[in-house]
Amino acid sequence: MTTLGEILTIPRFSTIHTLNKKADLSKVVDTIEISETPDVALFLPKNSFLLTTAMVFENDPAGLCSMIQSLHDLPAAGIGIKLGRFIDEIDPKVLEFADKLQFPILQIPSTVTLGTISHQLLSYIWDQQTEKLNYALDIQKKFANMMIKDATLASLIRHLGSILKRPVLLVDSFLEIVAESRHLKQQPHILEAHFNKMIPKLKEAQKLGKEYSFILESDAEQQLLVSVFPVQTGSYFPYLLVIFKADQIPYPFSQFAIEQANIVLSYTLYKNQKLLESNLILREDFFQQLLELSNNEKMLNWLEYGKDYGLKSSTSYQIVLATIQLTLENQVPPKNQSYLAYQWLEKQLEEVLPNALLFPIKNSNYYGILLQDSTAKMTKQLEAIHHKLKHLLPLHLSFFIGNTVSELSALHFSYNEALEILQQQENKLHECTILNHYQLKGINKLVEYVPKNEIEHFCAVYLKTLAFPKEETLIELRKTLKVYLECQCEITETSKRLFIHRNTVKYRIAKCEDLFQMPINDPDFSLKVRLALVLSEPKND
Image (cartoon, rainbow, N blue to C red; front, side):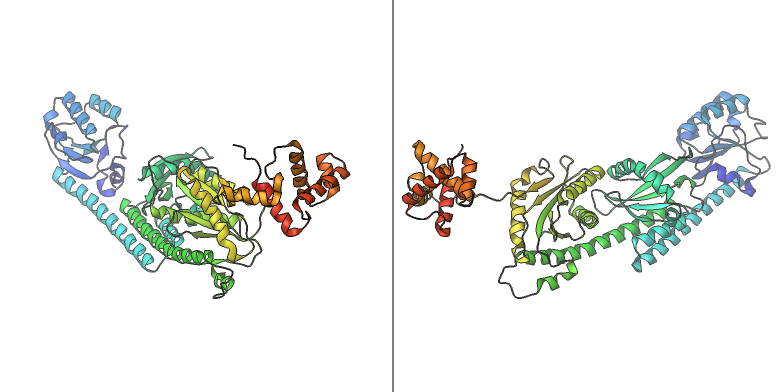
């Protein structure tokens, strides 16, 4: 982009002067046109610089003002008038009118023809564009070579920063810094002072999905222009290329150069994503096999086999299933968003639960977290991860927690518990709580498919008349028996719980033994009586 201001600094154009004081010389010049037609604005392309003698306005300053207005509305870059042939000087009213519009009026010397000055200006503009294009192509070549050599994102960003001579930053979908140029490493105060302020603007850039610029106020009361370029990888939330002080990027610079860097970054991110996908398929397979282990499995030493995945020997294993849902209405994140979410979640777990392992689950949109230590702070740490993600993006993170097991071969129990509670709430994931714990089923739940008459028969066989008592004395006798068993057959403890005398407890237990024709403290019989007491408890409908 070549401006009038740049042109006027070139020595060969030193004879061209600005006539009005408030002319905006930052206007971009794309082409040069020559015309003496009053309504020429109807036929000019935008950003044209018009050369003319203004002969038709020799005695018509009002007409010249009207033409200047039409050029300003186009918009045109400015007008160059050759004085001395038809018009000796510009009427002050015309200059005043142009100043109100900040529209540039330049004086073309009478010693050169309009054709000559047009050729010189066009040559300069085309040379500039050619030089910028060559510069951009050179950048493209350098980036392509880096890509072929499998350069990292960090090296690509450092290289772009050195080319632009400005601080450059790459931010991932979760608004976390992936790579930064040397300028930011050497001047960390820029990020320390501004990055948190930038987050709302970066979110806006993600939503727009196109180039976006904004102003930051620095501590020194200076304005800092920040330009953001989405790096598309097919993700609902793209990576962001952030360039500081973009308005101060020196020549030579071309938008094409940044676009080329963006393309290479997109390709590198896509390649990294595919490598991650391959790795996750292996992790999926390993986790699936781990869940299929049984006590009789002797084919492999699984701890040795799982060493590369971080598996270790422990007396406490636990499965937590995690789901990440987009909270925007009628929106579903693409599949590759889940890979980005996996990377983010894995990083968070490494920070707060070092021995936790993250695995994708086959044919699902959730992840399995394998905890290998008993940790009391686990729930608080998972809640903290949820709130951190919610603060960054409109994503809801939920956890479904199975119970602990002591051996790897029993891991599938913990997994099935977590899966069961997830499936129960699958249709209302946005409404469910952050942490969802599996509750162990009671005896009644375990026997819910046993016919009712068989359960009643079992209770009657072992409890006799105490199975479903109606008389007050039998109800009291049943209550005493129940508390006596709960107190591990301790008479003193039973008497305290029931607020009755020890001898009363002895008398009632003796009556129970007479009824059952069996000692209450017999282990096998005691178990059956306990079970019958639970199954014959009145249901509270």
